[in-house]
View 1 (cartoon, helix red, strand yellow):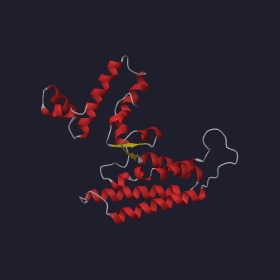
View 2 (cartoon, rainbow, N blue to C red):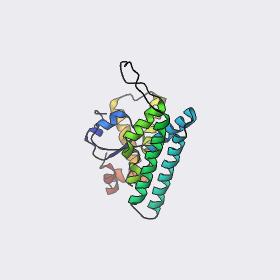
View 3 (tube, helix red, strand yellow):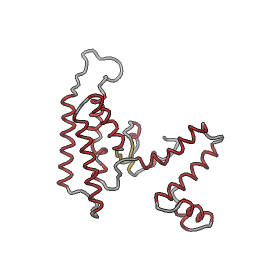
View 4 (spheres, rainbow, N blue to C red):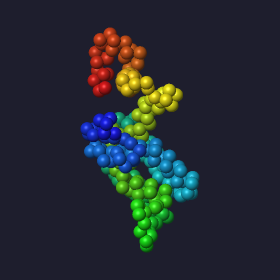
Length: 212
């Protein structure tokens, strides 16, 4: 991640899957709730714990409330509503802890104490509460990072089919072209038109390449 040279200097909001290494970088963190929903689904199906389903429904309800607020032209949730849903989040997490108690063994072994998957998830959700709910408190933050993951899916598909690139330079060229096209799409610019503008020395092309 250091070699890619993005996160070391990044000062924005990073939306990710709660991998511990990401938190070592000095930026604002937000959790991808699509990942959380998958984990909660697993806990609910595998361990039959009601709190997991309750939290899934709460997150989806908060997402719907935010989307409705945006449609109404608002840029934030009222303080009372934020407090209400933060309290519900905390209560559900506490319910989860109540049925997943942890007592360290009398004889300590090497390494970390082994805990159940529900307990591990609960501890992460409690520790990173602000990051998990940042999509609700800051309208600039998306509910998940699926849009970004779709951008790199083609790279993984090419790697799977071709086994990689013949040279580092070829990989860089492919990544640059792909980045340009996806940036055009995100800015509602037709990719073909963006390429034509670029080679036609159009200002739109220069604008799109400014962040590459």
